[in-house]
Each structure stands twice: as C-alpha cells, then as structure tokens.
Length: 251
Image (cartoon, rainbow, N blue to C red):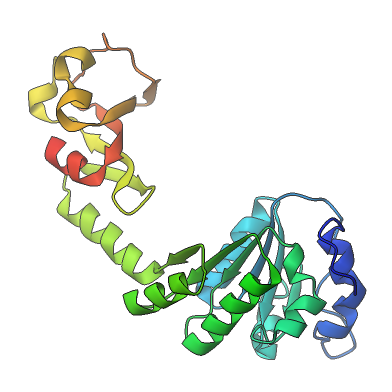
C-alpha cells in the first residue's frame, strides 16, 4: 500500500478493513464503510472506559474516528456504538502502517494497563509521522517518559479529575470551572459581598486579580462581555477567565 498522505484515509483503510476487522458469528464484519467526508481525523488506540468515551464523543461531533484495540471481546462490545473499529496489535508498526495510521491528523494512545504497550504505540505513531500524538499516563513518571520519547501531550485523567474535584470542594464559592491548562481556566464564581453594588470598573477585578470577566449570570439571564459600567448585583455569578489561584483569591 503506498504511503500517500494526500489520499483520504477512509478509502485507504477500507481497502484492508475486511482483512483486519473481526467478523461475528455468521460473517458480519464489525465496521461499516466510511463516507469519505474529511474533517479532523483521529486514530484512537485502546478501548477501555476512557478510550471508548473519547471515541464516542468525537464520533458524535462528526469527526472521523478509527478505534483500535487488541482484544477481540472488547472490539465486539464497542462495535454497536463505534462505526469503525479494528482488532489490531498497535505495538506493531507494520500493522499500523497497513491501516494508514500515518494519514491521521491526531493519534491518541489510551492504553492504561500495560505501560510497555503504551510506550511502543506512542513511538510507532511518532515514527509514522502522525502530526499530533496524545498519550494517556497513569503516573507522573510515565508522563515524563512519554514526553521524552516525543508525545506532544500527555494526560493523567485520574490525577486531573482528582485535582478538579479537590478545587471544587475547596472553593466553596466556585459554581463550576473549566480548566484550560494546569493553572488557568474559566471559572463561575458567586459574587463576593465586597463587590456587590460596584461597577466592573470600580471593582478593578482585572487590575487587582488579573482576571477577565467574560460574562455575568443573573438569574435566567446571561450578560455576555459586560461593559465596564455594568453594576454587580447580589446573587450574580461572575464568569471569569484567568489563573485558578487568582480566582481563589477573588472569592
């Protein structure tokens, strides 16, 4: 099979999908023909809870996703919720090359149990020239190793979930927040009493805390990009952008 990144990967994959996919009793092949539509393209390796939910969500948003796992039983379990699944040993670079892995925009390695398999799959995607490689790790040590071998991004889902929960529990005035990076995010915070009755200009939230107020939730209404003259009212919820630590100081 020629290595041609300009050729649509759905067509390339479908050439070999009958040989590589698993057949159920009665001969039904797991996986349906791609429609050839090009959007962001993802190859996801490892279909545990994290990998499966990631693949399902990306697919729901209309992205092309090819999901891979080495376990036959797991492939059968997800075949009803994912349109394109293949049983494949992703530590084998030749097998990945056969399904055109190098043609994907993003490769995500979600192998959590066996770090060696995680490592080999990550290296293989990098060697094949996948533009962006994201890998899941279980420990900070694994994260450091994966970054050193060339992963563009390494996530620690359990650690990050624990941090988010701790911040939510500790920040009693935080209604919700979206973490954008390790120390920055968009935070919904109940207006502190000392700001009530002041305009945003008078409150000097940006000057004193380094935070940008991007919206104000007021009952069922939302004030988007509020003006400096907007007066903060009791029970307002400020939607601010900035460092989490500064949000904690504001509350």
